[in-house]
Image (cartoon, rainbow, N blue to C red; front, side, top):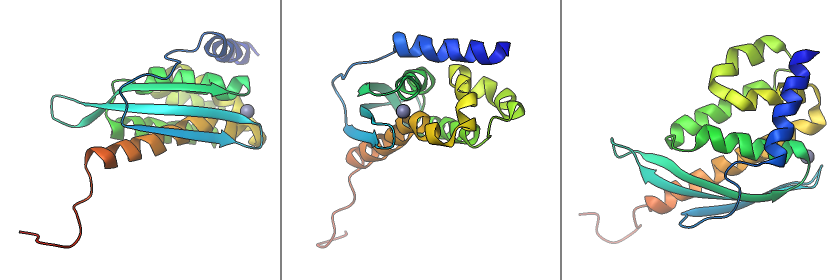
Length: 165
Ligand code: ZN
């Protein structure tokens, strides 16, 4: 099928020429995620900035990884999608990607999410193979984890005990 070969080409292209790869400074959080079923690994850093409204945005997402082409291409496609977005927007995009991964290859789901997911819609075919879904999701799990850690380090919890005045 023509669409599938186009999707495969997009994945292969991200794998061969990853966007935004490399670990950069500064960063507020770094996480390391592994997908033991396939042997995929990613180390991902998040650097937060602020948008005009003062809300945290992903100024940089940098990473290093190793593993199968799906896992590594997924980080690269994710980078393009989330860079410059606010954290809630990026996590919402992650939810759309999760929906795609649960579509069991249903092409109508991919069609609906095309605008939100851009190149990441190319992973639609992966949703037919339960063993590979974790490969594609690893980067998004790492992003969610790193964003949460970066936010909590940017807004430390109020100290407990003592005066609350
Ligand atoms: Zn994998």
